[in-house]
Amino acid sequence: MALQSSGIDYSISVDSISQHVFLVTMSVPALDQSIVEVSLPGWIPGSYMIRDFARNIISIEGLNNSNESVDVIPTDKQTWQVSANGNAFTLTYRVYAYDLSVRSAYINDEYAFCNGTSVFLKVTGAESLPCSVAINVPEDHPEWLIETGMAKRSNGIYACADYDELIDHPIFMGECTSETFTVQGIEFVLLFSGNTRYDTKRMCADLTRVCEHHLNLFGTPAPIKRYIFMTLIADQGYGGLEHRSSTALLYPRFELPLAGEPAQLNDGYVNFISLCSHELFHTWHVKSIQPDVLVNADLSQEVYTDQLWIYEGFTSFYDDVTLARAAVIPPQHYLKIVGQNLTRLMRNTGRFKQSIAESSYYAWTKFYKQDASAINNIVSYYNKGGLVALGLDVLLRQRSHGEANLDKLMQTLWQQYGHNKGTPADVIATLCLSEFNIDVSDYLQSVVYGTDDVNLTELLAEIGVEIAEYPQLSVDDKGGELPSKPTARYAFGATVKGSELGLSIVTVQEGSAACKAGLHVNDRLIAVDDYVVNVKLLDRLLACERTGDYTLTVVRDGRVLSLTMPLLAVPKQHRALTISNEDAFTTWLGIH
Image (cartoon, rainbow, N blue to C red):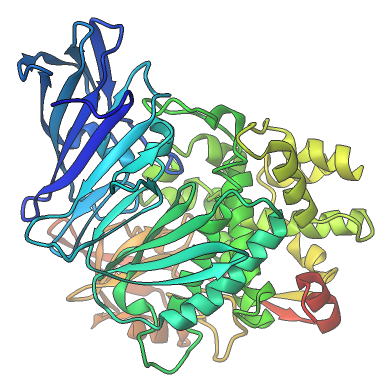
């Protein structure tokens, strides 16, 4: 195959829909190397877990310009050596693509999706060469549309400056619905896989306000000229992954508003707009500002940092508060979300054992590889990190008499560390001191590097918000709202999901009544006091007066067990936030 450029030219097509296989070719120019090494990344930026994408390569073969075979020899699980002898060569390989997630590659009858880290081999030592990609829709699906953040040349070929850019633009080809809107001269594309008709006008109107907020916060020039909300629709599933000019999203089909439906502010819709807000915020705060060790990171192995609380935690604060600032949700709805986040943290006994700095560092082996013990042993740098960011904002305002806040800190981060300069571990404390003359080291030592809870009761009082504590209302109580019914009388302490008969135990909280009874994860709770149980009946039984312990009938690994659960008081883990001073709170939000 004749080379078309002095860079590396790729071509990708769907080899088989039913077998979920991509066909990829890459043409490599003559390099001054007898042996050329090619490899696939082990992980994708933004998702801190070794994924071993190369395990999905089914076959690989090489040809030189004379169409003669060249040896392609594996040297480890993700690396091959090509006997190039200083000549140009072409590799052809097939990639299995059936991981319905935002981090890998997936093919079904409606569409094909991939991240570059799953399909494009890297040439060691030639990462800075320009790359081009020919994207080919299946011959029997000429109607499939192509969408990607890569620049498209006049000949239909997509171009990237180098390999790092190539793997930072996911590719979609397939059936889809889409809508575009423009904010401050930037084109935004809202894309949904498949043909479900959504109320895209409403979503674009709300996202316009979100985009305006983020663009105004960081100022000009923006690092994007065009941006894609690339949404994969599925029956179930949730996720988002940031890229330099797009985000890949995964969302449940009927959690979004359908065309013609009356507009409702339900959780599914709010969560989607918040997810879009979160991933767009990463355009600045991760894709441009990032930990020093992640600048030009080695994608073949783990890269450790204790800064993820800054990046995911701060972004988790902004994703929701932006919705209130932009009037997508009312102020009290925002406080409901904060209350739910706080309730979730209160139920996580792992927060007493692990700091969010440690959670960041061990993301590779603990946060991204959670099991049923996670609730008792680790803490989320997303969840607690967002609450730390909220507390830090109020603390900065308090200690500066209103002169400093988190927005100004983010703007300083962007000005000093944007464009991949890389932040040191102590960047937050250092900037607060150097830019605002405020020492926040005591706060960070306590709630970031230590395991103390953020004192939000005291801090939020400064902005006109009160926090109320209540016992858990029900087994699946999420918190966030004032109780509208009597609370449970006795504690349970396990999370459950419905099954064909009874309830499956998902997690068991350390020290809880369920723990003392001896319930295990994956037990099937068939009956309580000899009555076949479901969530509704379990809630009723926990609310009734009684004098003796509960008798639980459990199926475990094919055995039927009888357990005794003691009567324990329900811990006050439900948090609800209310506005006590509307002027103070709306001033804090920046709305009037």
